[in-house]
Amino acid sequence: MLLLHLAWILWVVAGALWTRRRPWLGWAHVVSLVYGIFIELSSRPCPLTLLERALQRRAGLAAYQGDFLTHWLETLIYPDVPAALLTPVAVAVCLLNLSIYGSRLRRARKNSSRPAE
Image 1 (tube, rainbow, N blue to C red):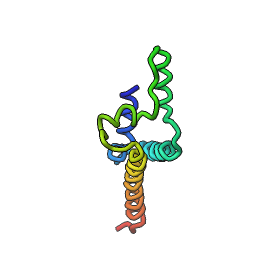
Image 2: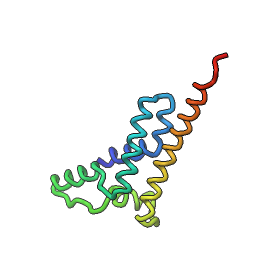
Image 3: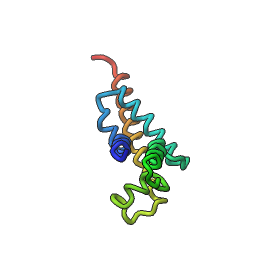
Image 4: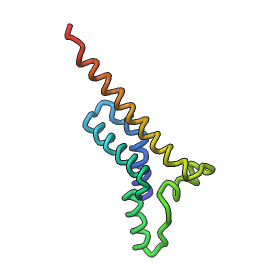
């Protein structure tokens, strides 16, 4: 589950780079970004976190409290960053990715509106 969570985070953070020439994949990434912003701002738990906790309990382990980022990544990546800062940073990363798509869309519209020579 940890690897699946990390893959999701990498997809959200860097997906715009991987979708440059794949519009269908770009739409999947945009949906992922909007969903990520929703989850962060609504303070709802990520479904992967819920699944991970359920699997831990099923294995007889004590399920961790809080969200995935706080539990697994905060000590590794953000050792001295308050948990309250993680949400705005996560939303900002998503918005940055969405701005990349906005720029691509503007460029595509500009190129398609040019008269053929």
